[in-house]
Amino acid sequence: MSIGRKDTRIAFERATVAQDGYGEDIPTWQLVGREWAAINWGRGDERRQAGMEQGSQSATFTVYDNTMTAAVGLKDRIVLDGQNWDITSSVPGKRRGDRDITAVRAT
Image 1 (tube, rainbow, N blue to C red):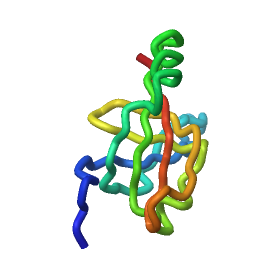
Image 2: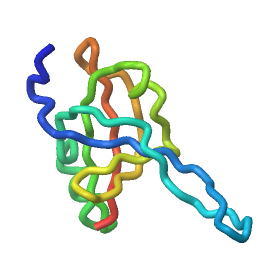
Image 3: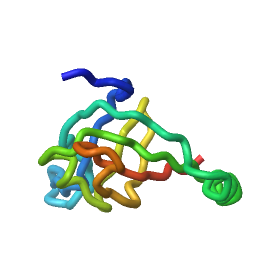
């Protein structure tokens, strides 16, 4: 299977809770999986402008639609080049077999 334009490797993480040596809960992130993605940096001038005004950047990550990516939800995040992206939507893509996951990152 060719990755086509999906040429960027991203990671999906899920919020979990661990306990320290004193029994205190510590929020942490656990790797769900990695996937190849095509990244569209914002959609339309309105979204880019809103992102600049609010101090955040928006992107849509197009990945293969499989059981792992279909299970990714709004409480999960994407990690790209050491930066964390909060997922705001996850829907089937325009092309069959794709999934579009929109996420924002504070700038």
